[in-house]
Length: 416
Image (cartoon, rainbow, N blue to C red; front, side, top):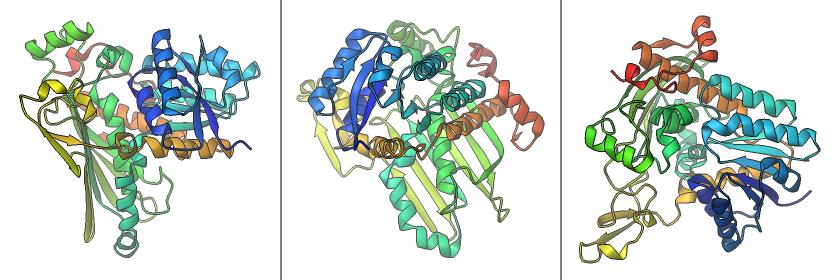
């Protein structure tokens, strides 16, 4: 058995570049190929991979052309292209491509129907799968769980977890377009925070979907990017018109879970925004159990620098300090290894180990489907302005075909 998984990238944008940084820190994965709708982007990513020493990535014209030459395919392309791309992967397998597995960056689908289609397609080709939800691999999150394991065993599991991800907004136009991305910040980042809450509440040694979702309440709002000044910025920079097809830039909610063995009720709160005005990307997680607690704040770095006005022009790229940084002067939080901090390094290492051993990743696509279901339930609860009973068969059936108004391009109706 090979000791390294040869991965082909589909997509060469921001997340793909970040994943190259992560792969450079592990030994069991290399970038063997890349394909993108924009060949120049693919060539640039191949050069980055070569410079990082993580493989001689060959640029291919299509997924079909790349599939026979790699061990696995990683989907880092826009959300609205996912179904067609997995259909192409499955056809390549039927034509003889010996793929060990497929990786999909979050979210698995824009809605439950798309996510379920991806799960079914992968199963039809007997493909191993890994759903990339990097925050569940974060070392601070895993470390607190290990550190508090004796307390959990003695006192019981956590009862409340709160998780937030906030920054100033996405990099690319399609992220802002709710019809292509799948919604606004709830679709983009709520999937992270919902997954973190579910995971951190789960008792030690239990499966990742052990806790049963009981109910969800949520609110979504357009607080910043719907104002005339900021709306014009979106239009000028990305060609996205929030006067016509708005999406939410703020979302918050609560999911209630039930322990099927003990009957205990526990809760996970999520909060997400594209209107965070501090240093840059902030992940804030905390949790409380009987007699113990944890807190994680990625803006609490051990490294800080200060750049005054006179020296500010020396910084060409604000994001040299922190992902989604909004300033290049003043007191800046600096992380020496963001790819590792946010969990990208460990999720790649785990996926490579899994595929090389012939098994699904720690988070298979079936898990991604369940997270998508919870995100859609949050949208439905926000639209109806009520707490949604997730045990109701009528609600469960409705979620299978549900497409949020915001995702339909009818955000003006939902963001009253």
